Length: 342
Image 1 (cartoon, rainbow, N blue to C red):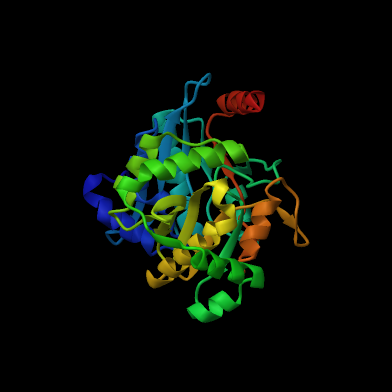
Image 2: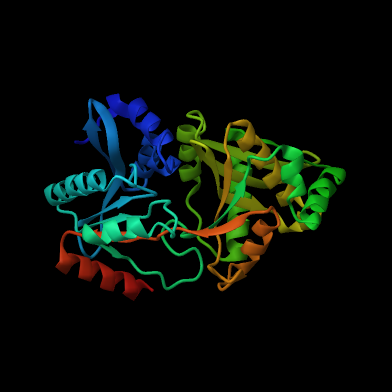
């Protein structure tokens, strides 16, 4: 069944309490993506009048193909050890896809690559691995990530960092850098820094109104925070975190390269970790990095691996993207169009 607005809180509570809670499966995330051309569909299975499994499915008609793609970012949400529940949810997704003329359902759950039982179950239900030719990030949502265990006491956590990182955190403070939670009024300056960072590091950036909407939807709901680093009253770096359940996720970062010697990013990350820990989070997810083999990063984002490892972040891989194809012909057209775009 599809849930309506009256089930918002129940849905968010369900996601919050799940095995792999993600703000990207929250009701508010669906509202955010609705402002960028997607339609949000909240598919749920109930047992005893309560949600037992589900997925925020984003729907958007594809150019050239004309048919919609269904995408469950960091979903679906369920007990992954319950094969029967997974099968029932997939059947419900198939029926929804058929009703709405979708060509496929794409999923990328935060399930560790070691869960070969999950991979096997997905394959038996008709999912196919969507491919992973790029050693950087590895998908629409990063497949290769690094995470910090926040359970130690703050002093012990700091002690686990590389000594140069501990030095840089303290150096930032000595040089006058301070970090605080940002406000909506700080968004223009943060976005200015983000555009500069994107140009410098050659990645795309969303429009300013996207970040305004993200702030308005997720910050009041307790699912996001903006942090800014200041020097003499000027914002020189910033970051955006998402938070759901016991995990905080670093999703956007920006800084002014002219102030690199002040080490604002080190203090920014340390402050964000402390905030996450105070909110009850046990994990800080640094998100995307390059794929590693035997501890060595392979891609062009290797510098990110080294920076994040300095905070005692541990590398891990998810199972990656899997597609459940509803229309083989249109899925092939979609796949060829994607390859043509490069």
